[in-house]
Length: 277
Ligand code: KIV
Image (cartoon, rainbow, N blue to C red; front, side, top):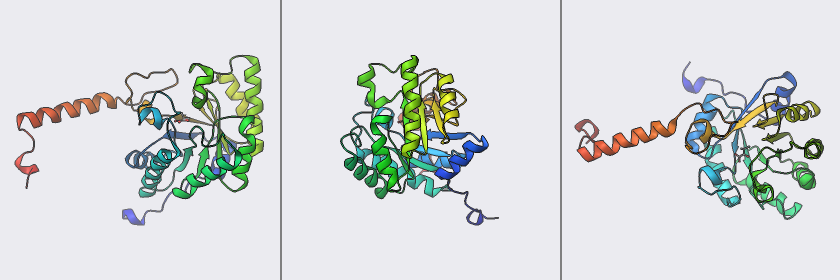
């Protein structure tokens, strides 16, 4: 069978994620911010690609996720969607709504969610927060835009917390988180990211919901897992939190390759006659 005759894998939908939870099939999620990486992720079979506002840190070099703008998120998301379309078009693409693009009013949130969905063909948006944004989540989902929630450590609230340490270790915060998860599900969210919370709490949230939970630093009992692509590839030398499993050391690989290139240019070893016209 030639390549063009191969059947395309079915695109992952919110319904498919729901079914995966019911059947106990784990959901794999990774972030991506550009076309090339999105192609690799889709080819490798990841279920969901998150165009995370972590682009603010790992792509743009800011110290928090707060500075990234909606235009910048749309720029990244367009590239990611093109990458997925260039491969099997299987992965679902979810785009983070950046800080202050959904907090001011339900109307503005809806306008911005609509802008993200219209300007590139992504599948869903992600918002951070619980009861405070429940009305907004309802408003966005009511017009047909799927919303992924995000509870626990919410990086857009870093200045309120003052640190990136594990959340909901105290009973009162754990109870609030559990309530928030139920509220988000009722408001229409199709999945919820649980970031940096105790595994036992994540497990009990997961059991209480019919929609999938996607953990990051939240233990193995979540319905799926998400990590930042730069972290699993070892591109970020300074960042080694306990919840990251590093699958490659691309930092060293790239540095080595670049050093060799520089050496070859300097010594006149590149380009060779075969690499010239
Ligand atoms: O922005 C991001 O990458 C995220 C994930 C870490 C969940 O929100």
